[in-house]
Amino acid sequence: MGAPRREGKVDFAPVAPDNRPTQGQTHRNPPVTPIPFPDISPELFSLQLGGLTLAVRWYALAYIVGLLIGWRIIAGTMRRPALWGPGGPPMAPEAAESLFTWLIFGVLLGGRLGFVLFYQADAYLAEPWRVLQLWQGGMSFHGGFLGVVLATLIWARRNGVAVGRIADVVALATPPGLFLGRIANFINNELWGRPTDLPWAVAFPDAGQVCPGVEGVCGRHPSQLYEAGLEGLVLGLALWWLARRGGLMRPWLLTGVFLAGYGAARMFVETFREADAQFITPDNPLGHVVGLGPVGLSMGQMLSLPMVIVGLVLVLGALRRPRA
Figure (cartoon, rainbow, N blue to C red):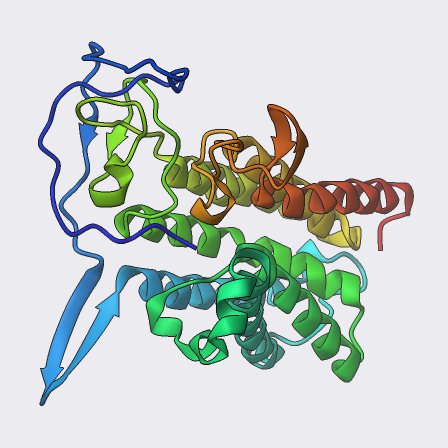
């Protein structure tokens, strides 16, 4: 989910410090000025057809391009038998199109239902028809991940292909989409981080300027860019490095590295990311969903922790087995 999208600009003054003020205190005029939020429209372009406006948004484009890149990665690895060892690739390159279709449904259905169940269940139970209003936004990575897992399992079983080998190539193909999606989150002025006075703090407009106890312009962690770098670039390069060095010859290895790597990156970045508004209360300003006092886990961390555990188990199991 995300914050309201940008509609205006920010009149600049020094940024707020990283630590929130204690009760009765107010931050005043710290020496660091935040980086202005770039003036990029969330819409790439729009068309007027009669009384209807059709807009192409960066976020939708990120999904489309990320899926297409993933499809090309899957098909490309199937054309390189040397990556797979003596047994060769688990399917023909042409089969990637069929798998791709299943993955699209898994991402979209899982992502939407995950957002509804994990983040705003009460609101959608009161107005269930809103589940179908995808144009209003609201997708969950963890829901999309579960949708992809289910789609991969069904496709592999229907086509008689080893699940672990297909899961590994899907893991290899996922980081580009994550990178593009987080860049789109940044452009959309959503999922920004907590207030900070670091030199790279960004002055997100509109709701991003609602910082209790802060006077002047509020600078925040650009947590979307942190996630793009860790979940997209770093994890993607690590997976490709492993694939080039025999990783696809050990079923479930790349899957395990992806799960553990994404989970760890997400849990780390959540420490800089503003919690979802529905979890924040006066007694719980950090938005923990489980915890004791000031120590706890956000919803993103709670959903990512099982990924780290399962990922490490898969990695250990893959390394103990001989190469395929």
